[in-house]
Length: 69
Image (cartoon, rainbow, N blue to C red; front, side, top):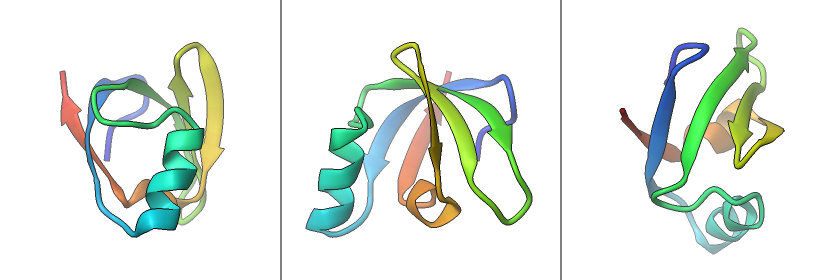
């Protein structure tokens, strides 16, 4: 998982059709740059994607593999 303030690229998404569809709707597809804005212990993470901040649950976030820049 990225440290707060770090950026990376979505490298791979692991999950079923519904997970991939949901992340696609949020703009999280392979090649997309993201920045970690905030992490809450055992809670959601806040990321910046294409200029927008998104909060996603830790379970969903764990399905995203990041390539660190």
